[in-house]
Structures are given as C-alpha cells and as structure tokens.
Image 1 (tube, rainbow over the protein chains, first blue to last red):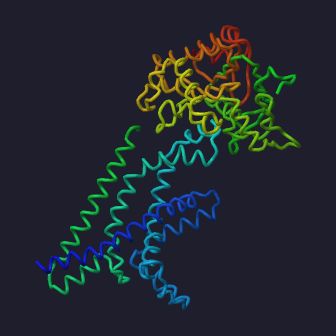
Image 2: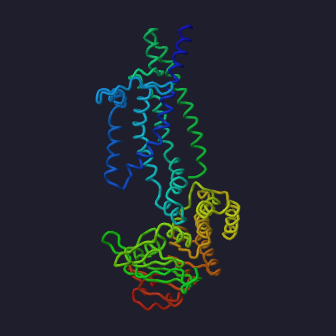
Image 3: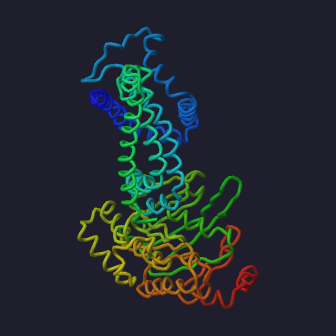
Length: 223
Length: 256
C-alpha cells in the first residue's frame, strides 16, 4: 500500500511536467502552425517552398530525434552551452522539449489549417470583399471561425496524440510522468507504476475528449 | 457629388478582359441610368458574369474605363489600365451591392448578423441603427420572423432574399444580380423575382444577369444581349424579346 501511495505521489509530480509540456506546446504550436500554413500558401514561390520543406522535414523525421537535436545541437554544432539556462521553474531540458514539440506540432497543425482554409469557398471571400470588409476582418470574422469548425476533428486527433507524445521527453531526462513511472517500475520491480501512469494518460485524454466534444457541439448550430 | 452625369450610375467604356489567352470581354461599353433596370442575357460563356465581376471589383479589367456613382474605378492611360487607390475602391464598393447566384451568405452568422455585420464594422453604424435597418429590410423580404435563424435552416429562396437584404442594407446606388434564381427551383424562384420586381417599382437601379426571359421582358427597362464577349444587341426590353434584329439574338431567343 505504501508503495502505491509513493508511486502516486511520484507520478503526480511527473504529471505536472507532462501537463506543462502539453500546455505550452499547444500555446506555441497552434499560432505557429497558423503562421506556417500562411507561409505554405504564400504566392511567393520561394517562401512557399521553404515552408513546404519545413513541414516535410519536421513530419518526416522522428520527434525523438528532433528533441535530441534541439537539446544537444547548440553545444555540439556551435559549441554554445545552454545547459545552465533557467527561466522561472524551467530548466533548459524542459525548454528544449517545448521548442522541439512546438516546432514539430506546428508542422502538423499547419497542414490541417491549410486544408481547412483551402476548403473555404471563394464565394465567402468575394461576398466579404464586396461588402467592404478589410482583409483582416475577412480573415478573422468570416474565414477563421468557419475554419475552426472544419478542422476541429483533426486538431482533436493531434491534441490527443500530443498527450501521449509527451512521454518522449524521457529521452532528455525531463522528469515527466513516464520518466517517473519507468524509475518507479524498476525500483519496485513491478508494472504497477506503468499501469497507474496509463490511467493518468487515459484520464487526461478523457477530459480533453469531453471538452473537445463540447466545443464541437457548441459550433453545431450551423452546417 | 452632383455633376453633369449624376443620372448615370454605371458607366463602362470599352472594357477588355482576358483569362490567359482567352479574351472574354472584347470591348464592352454600357451605361446604366439612375432608376433603370437592365437585364443582361445571353448564352453561357458569353461574358455576362465576367462583366458583372469586373463591374463589382472581383476581377480587374485589362483595358477600358469603369465609373460607378461618379467615381472612377479604373481608366486606361497610355494603353495601360490604372485602378484607383484602395481608399476610393472601398468607397466605390459601398455604392453598389452584389447578389450572387449561390447566395454566399455567411453560414456561421444569423440572418440578422449577415445583414448588420457590414453596417456595423464597415459603415460604422451603431448596433441599434443596424438592427433597425435589418428589421425594415426583413419586413420587406417577408422574413422578419427569421432574423435569428441561420442560413442552413432557410430554403434557397429565403436565403436569396436574405442576401438581397444584405446587399440593400448599405443603401447602395446600384445592385448587381448574378443569375439570382439559377440555383432555385421554379417555386422558390417566384418569391425572389417578386422581390426584385418590387425593387424595380421603387426605382432601384439594377443590373440583372438572368436566364429568366419573361422576367427580363417584364421587369427590365432595357435588355443587353451578350455573346462571344461582345454586346450583340441591346434595346428596350419588350422590343428586344419580341422583335430581335440580329440573327444571333433571334437564334438565342428561339430556344425559350
């Protein structure tokens, strides 16, 4: 019983990092994804090509490799030691994790947003133009709200995947939940910590699913 | 701004428009006087819609001149077509309304918001003012009870009437209709045509691209028959339909 209690405490400590990775990745990757999708759709060929390459590489290589590259790259490539950086409660391991996750997820989000934006009919833009809306007004009032509704199911998929992907931060020894579970499992010679960690991940995703379903429902008043 | 041409709301002079190598408008000129209803008829691909899109700033012409409500949208100088600056273009856009074939209502806005959004955010009217205008227009369209409905809950005919109300809301000098009933079945068409007829009676200046020949004959003052990127024939509505002069016009009208 004491084992389980200490496991729960350890995993809870890890969970806070897991949640942190999840939260900050969403905060940064969604706006970044919007920007990347704009760049990908740019009429200037070279700009579009650069963002296409970005998306291709970030989606085409393992996230774990990207994590290692962001963490070790500055030192091995440029000889810059960032290991001592500390922003508030966050050390460089954590910051590197957020950077790698955000860059990676932005690539996926960008393609989802591009699909949503390109699925909008030309008529919506034309009606807005003729009514005198500026480009910004058209984008934020007319296009984006409709795009959000269209991309929400795909975005939900990514969000749920992100929850589970946070465990990859283990590779940088970030003390997130999975790292803690692994440590507890080998110390106790038991799979219980893994099962408890699994329950944590599942519970988190269940809550997220419920919230996303509500949001989707709140937008179902039009088709 | 009152000037000698105050009675001419739309003045198009020798406009040319090509898409890649295909010349769609080959030097079209037309004038529309205040209070006049002009129907543009002709076979598909004849350039009717492109003409309307050029007049409503959705396409840029290659050559020629367009004047709307006394403001020059574009003019040709030294063989090059020059458009006015963005500020004037925006002002010109407030002088006309456009009704699309497939309505293009904003699906995430209620009927009321479809009509008031531009009034509030483009024309800087207060919400109360905008609501008042909206209510008047919806009464006219016999849709006042639908103010809080969403477009997806309306029939095609009702949606088109909402889009007419949206176009009227900013009190434009001229309204363009791009085949306003082509997406509707005959039953729903009636309601939309009635609304346009009422507007004609109120002396609203209108240019209507249509395939409804009897409607064009009865409602328009003048009909323009376009084919192959040129105006083949134009004249008083009744006369053109009942007694066309050009062989091409005769052949087209024989199909109706």
